[in-house]
Length: 272
Picture 1 (spheres, rainbow, N blue to C red):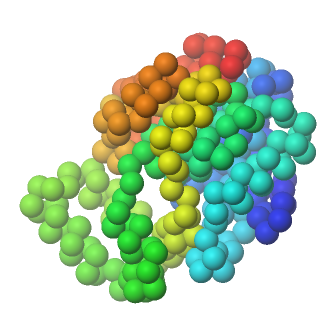
Picture 2: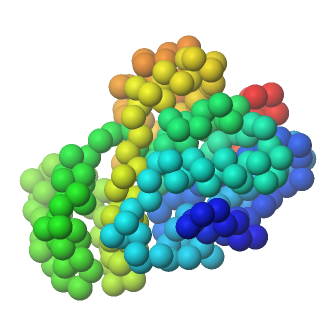
Picture 3: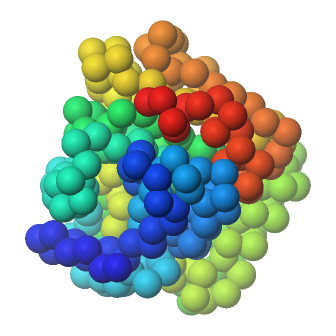
């Protein structure tokens, strides 16, 4: 299914047939197909609408958005229109890694439509000044473009930082593995620049959670060196009654059948 609203068009895959509506976002370099692993555990109580984010899966790769990036209100309007289209007054929100940043943005801009949120190893919990600075300037964006065809200098920096023991082995392997082909570097360039305005205000998200009594469940892998569980420590206290953290025995790859059963066993999905 391809859903279009305004200038934004995204592919959507649906899993399950239950009455609870779930909208889900995948991680970098992946697609909505990743959420098929939840179908067995949740399919009878929920219908999962898993979107392919821009530049991923079967969604378009609009190169012009590198120049004219996505805006928070644009995402709000798109997913409000989708919820109206499927006649969902409220929905459960799931965001994994990069998709967690999109989910946090919706928790800021359209919290009234969200019944509960699961943020799984979410990006967006920590502001990256270097990323904002590079992405917001023409000079910085040119550095990103230069990296596509000439990554050697960045690799030298990564290896130097690793050699100084300021970066662990897993993070080094993750960075190199995500950028070891031109295709991967182009995807990183397009996603980083087109999403540069999607930087959620965590205080606003927490305020919305308290005001609307909206549960936000953070889920991390204990062995995750990419998005560490410690990132929750500055966010959870902002609305401690409504933001909770669960740490499971896993790394960064958390979209598994076991996690689906964990969600079901806790009745979080069935009883928002």
